[in-house]
Image (cartoon, rainbow, N blue to C red; front, side, top):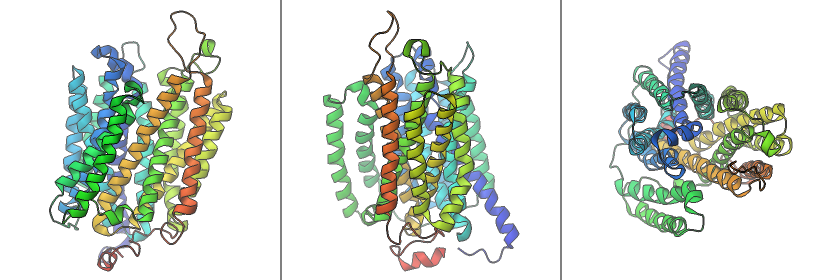
Length: 497
């Protein structure tokens, strides 16, 4: 896209302001996903509910994101990205207030559903960047916005730990903090992000959105609740079977509808498909790191023979914050790597760093410096991975499909995070210490953490396979300049080059 009438210095200032506003919005939405993780125990005690019921505080956000992200990403492409962004951020503000004021679990879950809808911010933000940022600056801008996702997830854990560290801690303070951040992001988008010029128009494929939403619900629900329901229970197996059936229905619907929500040719286009598989694996690794390290360092060494007796506050600030900060600092580096060497190289580096970081955790989690150092390496890996995936997608799909394509990739990362959470929880619950003093609750064995970290290393090794084999060829190898690949129609290429 040309900005020839505007002086280069003014272009740079304008682009910086837009990237700042969208980075803030992306950071805030990523905070919403991990915000309640450290305070689920407080919520359970305060509202007098069970562990199984309180898990819906995290599950509800995931399911809401799965339903609304593809629909709103496509809606923004069709009817205007800024109005959609503003509306979604407004819903997030309302959801945060509802969660902060909730006096019952159903109301809190409602607030979390509204917060989850805001996950659509990320693909919308990338679509805005594609229109407003010069091609040579686009990889760096996308990488910075993407890097704030990993940073926001870690920041939420740290901030929640700080706010709930006292003896009279109130979990609602975390949701009031979320309200403030959401309002700040809303104001930034309203005043700093311009109205986008590209609108495709057309009908909204509500039938496609409905069938996709049901498919994702039936897939993600047993993944997130399988530990409580039992992995071999009728509910879990029935949900997975229902997801398979609905996936077939969704594909049939999208092949028949005149203006489908998802173009099936785009969906199975190799670079897009590989980016989505990488999204699942990187999302898995990020949550395996967050949860594995958080649980590990809080283990009472006197009872278990390992761990650091850390409080929630110490676990967040000392062990998780360094990795979150490095993930933010690594994002512009990832952008430069994508720009000069291509997203495939960035993804390969992410894979190598992730595998090394998790192997380090598996072999050396008995020392504070090792746990922190390995977490820093994994944080950089996640940031490079998040920088590479949007670049692969943006260079592989036409302009009018960028919102929905990045929306699907966002769902793939959320799916990976859900799988990571389920795997870590299941492993730690199944491998426990046999001989503990009477009255002491069950605690995970050290072997459970070692296995978790080796699985994380395997996930990133699979990312290396995707980078080396799945993205072999022209797509994903050239430096991303924000233009579609040969798969995109010629008019679309002309409009953004």
